[in-house]
Image (cartoon, rainbow, N blue to C red; front, side, top):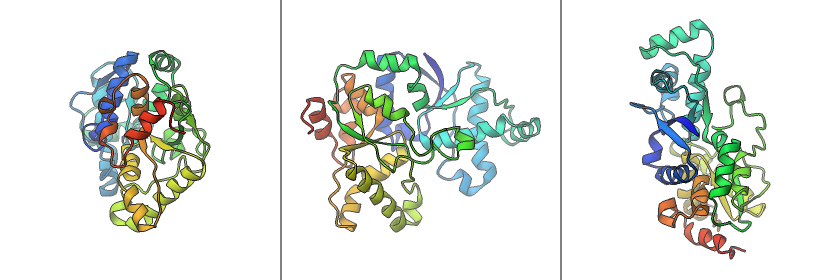
Length: 294
């Protein structure tokens, strides 16, 4: 099982837990993600807002580098924001000859657009990887009720992502179900968390987060799982602030879905990355694995 891989900046910074748990799981199940050499930031946080050309050029260069390195493998992306930018560039590159020529001039290197860009959830949903996850699982989460949160960037716009079921995506649900989690049905799976607007419109964005947490709780979730470092940071880091500002008492641990997979495969709390969350998540994880999460 091999894919080319774009790690993005967050795997070693704000989403370091994602990177740790992803590498742990991949090693256990034998999934080889071959990192692009000399990759650059995809520009998700500043590219499109600074310049439309920059927003396409930055991810396009990574795709072109992947093509040049000649592995001939689909390009997997774990971060939802990176995935969105890479899919935009990929869509542009696989367009007309004129579009490719324009893009090649922009990045000063040839680009063909013949290597598909895929979400890590798509990779983990292949039959081969799913079987690997099932075989590697040593522990069950004993029906831990999890709200699988996809956010907006891995789902929309559909003409870029190709996602068929916008309102009720199921890939993460099915992956986590295979290690004993019980995904809940809820209404905010693909709603926006406010993203970077927590900087310029904090009141508006916090209201969005409050509604996400409220709906997850109302539908019986004990935790939220995500595949987006920005969503993770917002829900995990800002939960205490939301409780204070809105006089709420949300107690909703947030996990990268790979952290839950790593724990099920025998990783300790530190190796899975769970010990460094803002909102405490260790107790729930340990209780669930021991069958005492309620």
